[in-house]
Amino acid sequence: MPAQPVPSAPSAVVVAPNAGYVILIAAAAAMGGFLFGFDTAVINGAVLALKQRFNASSLTIGLSVSLALLGSAAGAFVVGPLADRIGRIRCMLIASALFTISSIGSGLPFTIYDFIFWRILGGFGIGMASVIAPAYIAECSPADMRGRLGSLQQLAIVVGIFAALLGNYAIATAAGSATSPFWFGYEAWRWMFWSAAPPAIMYGIFALIIPESPRFLVAQGRHAEARVVLARMIGPHASVKVEEIARTVRRERKPSLDDLRGRFGLLPIVWIGMGLSLFQQFVGINVIFYYSSTLWQIVGFTEENSLLITMITGFTNIVTTLVAIACIDKFGRKPLLLLGSIGMTITLGAMAWVFAISPLNAEGFPVLSPSAGLTALFAANIYVFFFGFSWGPVVWVLLGEMFNNKIRASALALGAGVQWIANFVISTTFPPIAFNLGLGIAYGMYAAFALLSLFFVYAFIKETKGKELEEME
Image 1: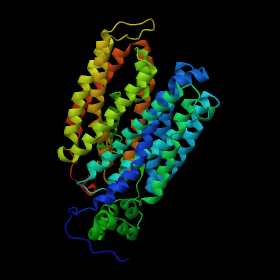
Image 2: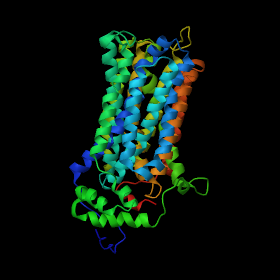
Image 3: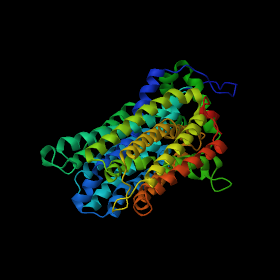
Image 4: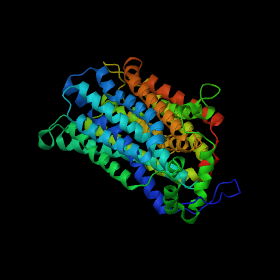
């Protein structure tokens, strides 16, 4: 098909999108975020059961939780160049297959060590999905919808977290405990992991249905296919949009990790993306979702109540992400991040104070009075509220849109990889810090990082609301 004339105006084309179709394909891609969230939380209800089943040390159990994150980091690092080579859709299919295999294997371990292997394998797939979903959504979204559609990634993550926590609670309650037999005589904790297989398979089915990213198709010289995809998204302006994308592609050579290099080792925008990823994890959010049920049991709550509290926290996360979706394209990215940093600093500080002043039991953990327990629960859920409408969704939106077409996949892969490594650091160091220094010190550290994140956003983050991807420098 012959190329259409290149419009003389250099500005981005403003079109009326086919909102329903764009939302559907963005939601399908965000299924990768659901798996991300599910994998994050499903281990929560099985930690103590695994320790008992394999008579494993605290260090080994901690590694069984955190080593999956290194697999995720590896998957995130690898998928950027791979997505530029084979496309976004094929990478989604690979991620789906890896996580499906992992969910089955994680429920059938012979030792704690092959359990760790299956978790790392699944982590690799989750790392791939964590990069592909925001990149794909950003590349398929009109500028005036991109914030809301990009937030679908975080909404899918928190729904995945809640689904895993709800499933864990239902399975453990029905069986009596996570270690008790459930269906067909298999222990309840095994069914917690097996419950991840259906959504993993569904993710692969969705990937077979949705179209390839039009920006990837243009980069591969497949302009006719890109026009067909864009025609369904934006209608008669598809040809003009293809040429607009092509102009940015023509100026650049084939994407490479070398494109990320700059004066200080990496381009400034890449450092900023990595900083966003680090702060998103260093405020300690995943301590809540990996260890919260164990934590609440340690400070005096029953197993059933601890799982229920954790499930309520997961529901809070969903509600606040909906707030973010409603606000992000109206108020912008930077204001939400600033407000979130302020709220997290206050609530994490309150939790640190409660844990620090409470009396300790024989094992060195705080014993919360009824009023202190209520304060800690209230602060924890308000903390999740502030994270949920700010740093949770906004970081993923920014990582998907802040880089130009030339470096987007590779830079997003690096940013997501750094995020997984930061997650690993936080989740691995929390148990020794909590055991040896105390919960007050642990949460005080997270409060300090929340305060630092406020200054980071104020100094380095530029607003991207309403800009087309072709306008990113």
